[in-house]
Length: 127
Image (cartoon, rainbow, N blue to C red):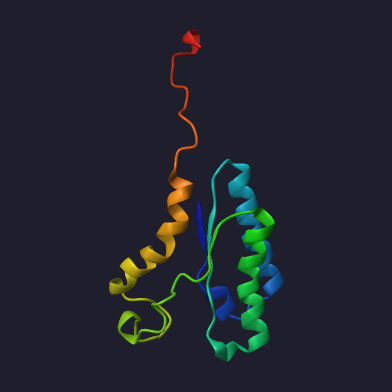
């Protein structure tokens, strides 16, 4: 399960405790179902103030540590600062940014895709 919320909650100034509770609930439910989880972090622009932007970034760090899941620190690393890779709004990436975003995620995702053990697919009566 890949959990990536983007920055909309933060851009709306949503309360940090509610963002944290939502991420925690998604991770908890995913793990309870047996899914492996990859959490994708987001960073807000600095105009939201140092206290709020740090608290927002810390939500991802804390959830990753609490639930022992890998964390991609910032989906748009290397993308958000390149005007040619961002749409005019300065918030959303252009299609050309997709390969870079994949490069940011792939090293964290590959270990989760590895099969842990061969499933037993023999007929029930043959076990």
